[in-house]
Image (tube, rainbow, N blue to C red; front, side, top):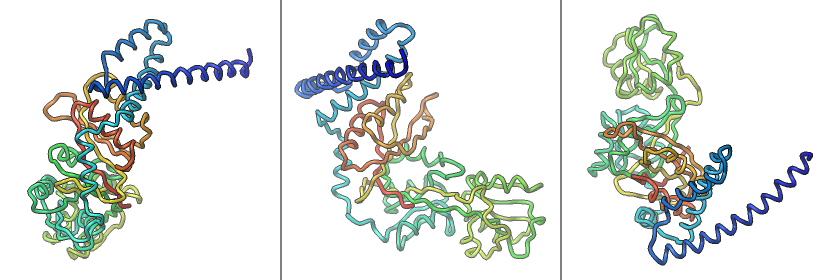
Length: 380
């Protein structure tokens, strides 16, 4: 047979498969009604294993793996369909909707804000992008920002979570697991690193450079060209600039922002020393209690998934089955458990959509631990 004849056979087979799948989904609808009437869970793992075992036996060794993969996807789609039909809403989803309904319709212009670092840090720039007149309380450590918000000392906290060059700020992700906070906004700040010195300093005078660890990574190309210079990590780039200003020593320099040059009376010896010009850091803004402001279309969640083969695939297949866009996937080790991870997801979807309700309900019911981190808008 030629290719046209073979494709005709495929088309005819697809038509039959489609009709059979429609029959299967219609039967799933009836099963969903039964489960709802008898208060039964959507997930039936024993039943699914029996089906896979039976189909494996009749599919043959060559096609067994493919048949199992196809049917695992069919199971995922069927569960999503059943969840939609039953219309069940778990406690997490109810709390999310309550937060959306009770939140003010306008994001505040003025607020008390906790930031890591000191005046001149990029977190200050992020705060001033989000608020017209923020009252900023600076903290030496990331955890201090979480504590300030959790204790009620500050209404909002702002911290970096990832950089377009250096990647994720893992310490912040770990603290998101530890503290109960809700992300209400995120903002991208363009990072422009400069080599700052006391006036009159030459490049050959420099023996030590102070800056934050993320900045070291972001400026690695420039730093690698400097010979005989020690790179000393600082808590943040603003503290590094302040240390150089206080030292008044030509052997010291800092990698920091132009704003810090003005703030601490320093001179810019080299401009834009980062590896890439389009270098951005993403900051999150969070509160103690959930708030969802109008227009929010990005949701962050964390999950602990059973340490079994295919567990992550089954979670990811939910996004595909429901038709949602997964923006970010990050894994972090769980300190008290060997070789197990907490997964962080960013999803693009409005809380008002039925797909969002399906996602929250399905994921919480299929994972070992589920944590909702907030629904918000990202300012670019």
